[in-house]
Image 1 (cartoon, one colour):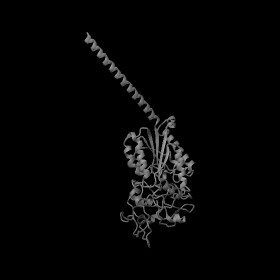
Image 2 (tube, rainbow, N blue to C red):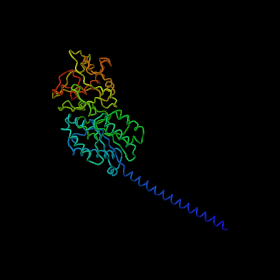
Image 3 (cartoon, rainbow, N blue to C red):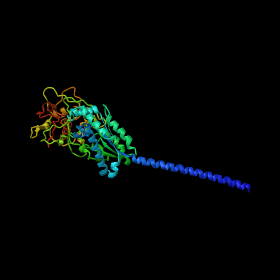
Length: 420
């Protein structure tokens, strides 16, 4: 009897111990659930939207109304950008107005400030380099989550920064969506391609057009929008679509040095009416930059073409350059060509690095020309001729720049306006 009682007492003690263990385990589980709920709540409250801007590209410069406004202009640009993001959230992504207003918008813009300032002054968009600094100061002051980052000089510094930041945030569950303002540069295509094949990641990206989306980037299938275009590209076309207008070549602005013969291209000249009396603005040459672009080979070799010596021997079809066209105001205009700068025909001919003078105009007898004179048969076909002519007109006519006019009926360079 005594042994049974002892055994019963031991059993009861074990049961009590088990109950205590279960009670402690339950408390721990409850604490973990509480912590996880708190973490989930914090994560929901910490959600944000990200906008990444490659501000080193001409097409991604803000409209002059903002750019020339100093600190106040920068603040206004940032506020307008945020308003457009809200608009896209509601109309493009289906978010409610209440959720949109409560969602923080993080904006990061990257550029070489010194190079960008020099370009804006040279292009007569700003009166001094300090004016651009004031703009970006105002831009950054507009909100604690809005930043301009001066990446300094160096090839693709802005690109590399943007790519790494994108890779960091796209896997962050608190970052619910990313808007990319870098659609001018095919160098981003290899970076974006892996995301396009993963549904969860591809749905987190919207490509923002500021004047066109590079065709190979558009083919990746990401969501895109054109509603931001009025905020950018003060000079040039307001055309909307995936193919930028003729002459509108988004290019980096900071590192190249221009030489007299090969002048920068007019911006969006295909959209300028022949009656327009104003000179198109110029885009900086992209020598030695954007190596990841499909056209990087030709960009690396776009050196000035020295004039030949002595009497010229004209190529058989050089008469395609004639006649000199003028508008009603007497201004010279360029012939309208059947291609856009991103067309396959143009990219093919551009990749050959042909000497434009040799293939469009006359024998090129200078020894220091760095372009090819025998890589392709002469004379060129009509399509190849026009494609090379379009590329060559990226260079602005030096005589037009110096004298305000050019009467050379076989000038191969651009003159600022294109016939309608």
